[in-house]
Each structure stands twice: as structure tokens, then as C-alpha cells.
Length: 245
Ligand code: 6PG
Image 1 (cartoon, rainbow, N blue to C red):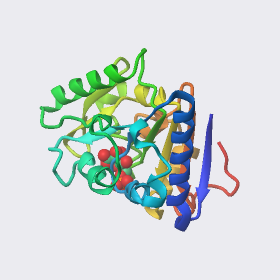
Image 2 (tube, helix red, strand yellow):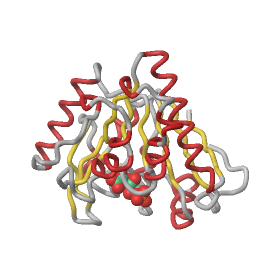
Image 3 (cartoon, rainbow, N blue to C red):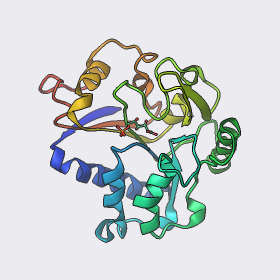
Image 4 (cartoon, rainbow, N blue to C red):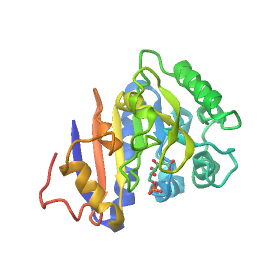
């Protein structure tokens, strides 16, 4: 099941926070815990800041929250490019989450070993054939990538792994990422995109030709879960009015 929410720019962050709280609360009520794979990049930063606010963070029992990363850069955890570093600065330092509930990618290791180690971590936490996150947060690059699944990268073809190292051809760098099948195993996926600069790609992805090798975010289709496209008005501006999936 998938739906689009087009939110005014000034309330987009609040909508993201309320969706996060709704999904986390339901997971804790139903299963006693909640697992979230966080997105990197700049788009989610105001969401992590908002979750840190006293008025918001007290709505979550962080002892029951397990945080993971949907992807990570191949840099040390204290590097300014690290997604862990970003989340640590904006969220982790401000919330009472037990250290054991923060599942960081061990990027001190070489990229192949880091991917294998994280996949083992995921398999220790999630029983079954695939990691069933309660929520996976995703962004989208202007080139149509998501997590670190980049256009025409080898990682797009991987069908039997949960977490891999992946070479981004257009950036000539190694990254670490959940695979498309691991992401699609989630109960809930929220794709968070805002800003006018990505409006053409959003229209291309949602209305244009289906070509996930070129636009990897088109691989994102939960097998048994909900997909929410959370767009602001600017990034949705090239979609026909009343557009629905
Ligand atoms: C990362 C992200 C990546 C990001 C997009 C969008 O590690 O950078 O996981 O997939 O979501 O590149 O990035 P912005 O939000 O910075 O535009």
C-alpha cells in the first residue's frame, strides 16, 4: 500500500514527526518494541532536531526504541560526513536511549568487513529471512538514488543480502547500505523529500518511465507494508494537481 502526503513546507517537519510518533507508538503497543532505520543526508536533520525537543521526546519510551542506519558513509563515526555523527549530534546526545539500542555501522572496519559485521548485527536482532523494520526512513538524491543505492550500481542487482558495500559510480566512492529487498521488508517506509530542486526527479520517478536502474528509488515497494511519500509543496510542484498513486 502506498500513499502521497503533500505538506506545506512550513509544516512538513511536523508531519514527519507525527508519522514517526504514530508508527513508533503503535509498534510499542503491539510488539513491545520499535525498530527504525534512519536516513542520512540533510533532509531529515530538522526531524531529528524536532524529535530531540523535550515536548516531543517524552512521547516515546526510548528504552523500547532500537535505532539503525539505512546507509552509512565509508568514514569514521566522528567524521562530519558520517550519518551516525549527524544523528548523534542532533538526536542521540539529547534522548535517554540505552547505548545498546543504538546500532551503529562499524565504519572503523574496511567497507566490506563493515557491511558483513552490520549484516550480522541485523541478523542477531531480526529473526526470519529479512529484517522487518517497523520504520525505514529514506531520502532521495537529485539523481533518483535512495539510501546508498545509486544509479547503475552493482548493489541494485543484489538479491540475497541484507546490507552491503556499494560503489557509487557517479561519485567514485564506496558506501554502505541496506539492499532494496531489506528495505522492502519493512512494515512502514517513509520517503521524505522537500525543496524545489528535486521536483523534476520526483515527477520523473512517480509519473515517468519505470527504470529503477536509472532511478533506484523506483525499486522501493514494500512487500507487506506501507509506503508513504512525504513531499512538500515545492518538490511536488511538477505533479499534476490531485495526482495519486
Ligand atoms: C545519505 C542518504 C542519502 C540521502 C540522499 C538525499 O547517506 O546521504 O542516505 O540517500 O537521503 O542523498 O540527501 P539530502 O537529504 O542531503 O538531499
